[in-house]
Image (cartoon, rainbow, N blue to C red; front, side, top):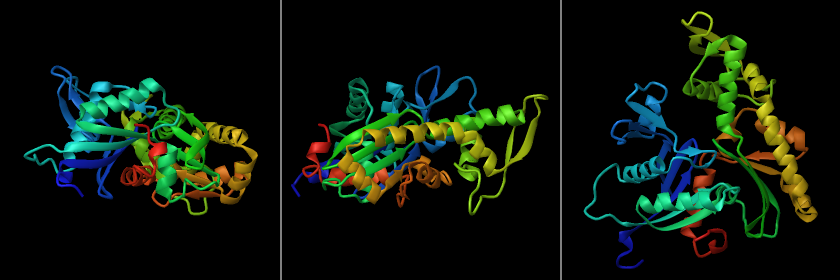
Length: 342
């Protein structure tokens, strides 16, 4: 360790559509929703993360809530920059230090990202105070986070279902051999639930309620071994305009999500078709690994297994697998030089 090593702060960021995680010294120091609230008149940021999420769908006309990332990439540059800056400040509990350390960041990005979108991520991080920015593809970070030795000549299939994108990749020898990145993921599940409630029950629910419903009774198959209890949902009756409550079961949600999950299944089959035969033989043996918040949907592993006839394993902590892998890559930047683009 050098004399001035304390002047450099190394952080790993999983910049997600739904949640942003920051890891420093192997600890998750920030785990916040990727959302900001801003004053429309002045343009100032009023709240970031959990505080902003509590305002989501409940603001008056002078405040708006913005999700800076859409489909895994930055959609609102200024808000993204303010969000990254605000979350970096949260690392030290919001305390101001006498001098600001140089930041070295590793940020994970979707594998299907364009050069322009890549540039936006790098610029946002640099404007937020980073001196060095490295980028790593999400499926690679997920594989490292799950504990797979990515440098071995062994094929592994990783599926990372996040908020905005589903990343499907076959990894061998420290590189992505073939990948499929589709902009269908957790946010689409939430939209499906909103639409289903409106169409089937004539009840209008907000994004936050639909998200809660997905967490409480979300399922990928209509018959589960240990089903969750039915969940009471409150919203506005579209016929009368009066608030009302109805009870929803997991099998209804499984029916609502069926079409979107089918699209993810198609992408998985498409990625398997592109896989070289030797790696296909490895995948038959090792199976498929699931990571990301979307993989926590009840029965999803069973459904993918039935479709592909392959064993499916869910990562130990699917929400943090990508962030953990990004943190390991940050610690071993020299070792993983070939997979992090400077």
